Image 1 (cartoon, one colour):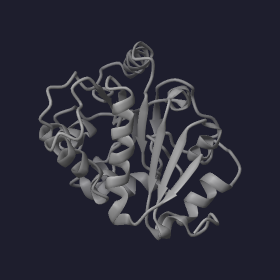
Image 2: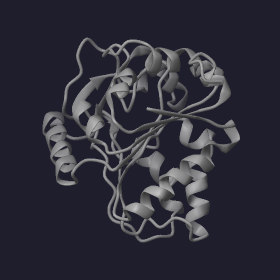
Image 3: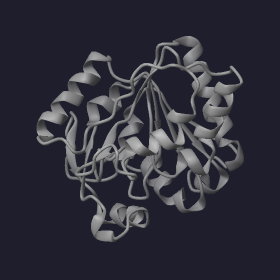
Image 4: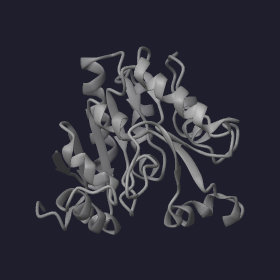
Length: 245
């Protein structure tokens, strides 16, 4: 696990540098995405869009895949993760790309959808480069704290804290989905490279807990300590409790 501390204003550029290196080494990379606040707040997607427009990034041979989606809302819903990706990234890219992939949260049979998505991951030979955020409760993707975590794609119950965090995006708190489809631990561990972004003093405690504390399914991000190739990008605020600032 490698730690990099940069100014919050430089996070987008640093992530883009890492992505550019990945695409130079393997233009046909499977690129795992993330939603939430980090890609927008820290200019990550905006920097990709700018660099692609200027010819510095080329996504023509890459495949985008998202690890999770709300249960019970379809891809056209404005708060779906598919809509998020379309609005903040995909519609701005000029390159003609391969189809992107995301679980279908509106599937009639959720177990069948989990199996379909898991089979897709295997056909793609999992993810080459996975961007991740870090939830305040230690979740990654929508792998929530639990006594045990499935190895393969599954339907996860969303922690109440995360439901409250997301409630501002829906008309009423009651509309916030209570479940998601998310990848399991096998897909996380088989990702060949993971870039995790966590910034702001409000993330300092969970950064320390996840990356300096014991490995436990009650803090899913702590399992990344077992991964062979993780880069954690922090700012001074989020890094202040791990002893490297």
